[in-house]
Image (cartoon, rainbow over all chains, first blue to last red; front, side, top):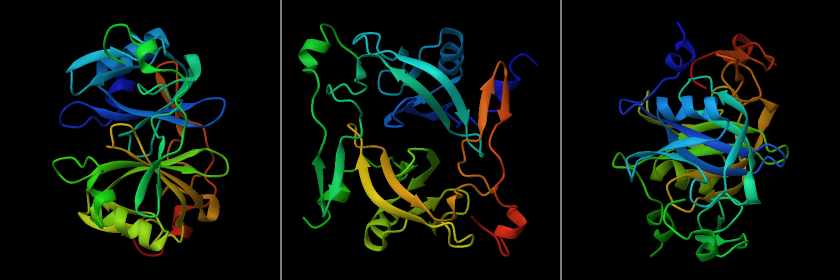
Length: 132
Length: 132
């Protein structure tokens, strides 16, 4: 019964769930990524947000290349048990690989998506290798 | 080119994207649901959040049965263009079909999901018909 909490999650057929990460202090929604069982387990074990990269098909510790680790303060589950919400402390104040605070930096204005958040740090300075 | 903003969204093979709804005033994450093109279009046209119900396979105006409509204040798109974020005014202060403010009312405490938000209104009082 040790994994009962993991079994309660309503994983997709691919074994994934979407995970929203929200800044615990400001409430800003930072990222939405995907988790598999291992990612959720590692997140709990280490206190750092881990995700499953669908494009790279590998487990991924957020910030492993950039240093922009997400320190997890709370983990929530929704009523359908198919979505995770992480309340995090965002190291460096930058969650997005573009060097912005949040990945949600485009806003719909009329019929156009307008970039409305500044780049806080040049991605070239953030990444010496690859990844996010 | 009228639909360029819709074409910019990176729809899944099933023609969907996840949509996070966040309370515009408090920052609380309320719901995560799915949108297809029509749902996003209707959301923009009406100012009320519309979603695609995967279980019922139909377009759905949030609050159509409960009255707990989500008035959309802003629509954001993430860097991968595959997730929507709605900033909403939540009518009635209740987003969840269980009668709670947010669908994310379960929190991981040790190895257990603990219900940690109160029911604000009995679902029996909310729904006379069906749906959410």
